[in-house]
Image 1 (tube, chains in turn orange, yellow, brown, purple):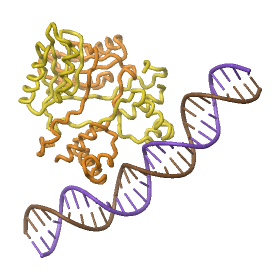
Image 2 (spheres, protein in one colour; image 1 turned 135 degrees about the horizontal axis):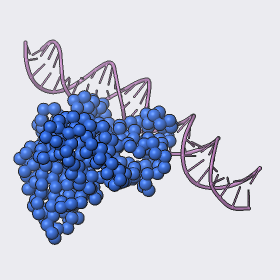
Image 3 (cartoon, chains in turn orange, cyan, blue, red; image 1 turned 45 degrees about the vertical axis):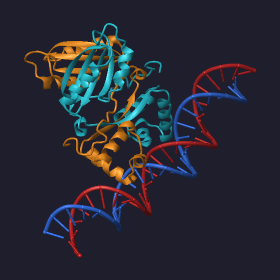
Image 4 (cartoon, protein in one colour; image 1 turned 180 degrees about the vertical axis):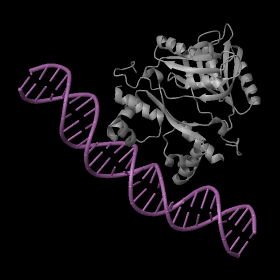
Length: 158
Length: 158
DNA sequence: TTGTCGGCGTGGATCGTCTCGACCGCCAGA
DNA sequence: TCTGGCGGTCGAGACGATCCACGCCGACAA
């Protein structure tokens, strides 16, 4: 993980469909070398995937909410998480510190669907309460964060 | 936006580097047609980009927090948002209903950096209070959500 | 019915990229 | 100095991207 790797990662976070030739031109490496480095980054689990991002409204998912999930005193968080994974409308799930065990992001078509989704969450075994915050607009989301681009050492063991 | 478009979108959300030939095989279309449809989806703003996802820990961003931002009575939310965009450590920003104007997701290297980031947020003009929820682990994040794959009509005007 | 038009698909040609193996240079250690 | 490993470049064949010409089909008007 040297600076070249970080530049390659930054390029791929910016444009996940950039060709190895493109990346090679911007970082000053041959396409073969970029290919090899990217392969190693993928194998090491640094790059976990490539995904198209879609305007949620365009695919009919106009309602977003953040839901805090408070477990019962005896609830097992791992079991709750296993149930949450099964719900397709939950896009993200964070285990958090505090009264709530999880905060999840839910995206659905309508407020009706939101109601149903909350019902499904509440019905999970070990869930005591949910606290819902409706999103009015998402200003930005999943923005690449390249603050460490110019560091020269390893950030952390990978 | 017919079913084929939705299948193409699903394929690209799953694997943003899938080749048009690959996609064509899975949806039953020639690479040329896939190419054309994808171009139209991009032009229509349905597909907003392609991005590599990275294990945050591997790039040295081991601390994640969700921060609610409560504005002063006179604060302008748009002005606050403009300031938030400038902070590189904020990955996502949602305008929400409730006492808080925004909920943002922050990712930084260390708790020290988190403290600094919170300071920067609080120092924004119009921000009265912040409420921070530390993320212990992210179970999953930004998962593709293809619940509408089999619908046959347009979900919504794009 | 017939002609025309537009949208959308296929197939082919061409060009760029991927992706492999071969090779080279640098550096560390014996 | 020799040697081995790492990491780079180079080159070649295969594959994909991308453009264009063409065909099919449904809508519509005469």
